[in-house]
View 1 (cartoon, helix red, strand yellow):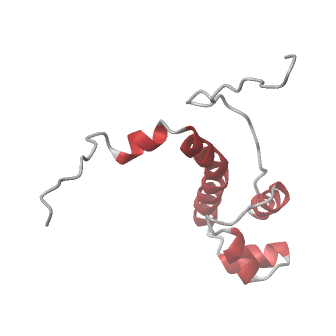
View 2 (cartoon, helix red, strand yellow; view 1 turned 90 degrees about the horizontal axis):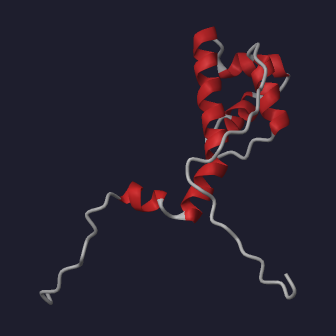
Length: 112
């Protein structure tokens, strides 16, 4: 051992990450799909709808439904709306202000 100690920030990891604009952007792009899948899962449980039943209602394979419901799957609006429809729901998309300010960009073009 060299006797050196690493300086460790006392600020929790998530707080440090939350201040990073790239982390904020990544979270903003991943959260909608994650929230949708969680809400659909809750609706399926409340309605007693299995993945097999959802697949049957959609005329798709159970494998398709399983893949679509993975939280790391890149859902399209069309697929999300179709999954919601099969549960007797409609997909409603809205916009809300960011909790963190987006970094400002300054034009570096000549003459601006």
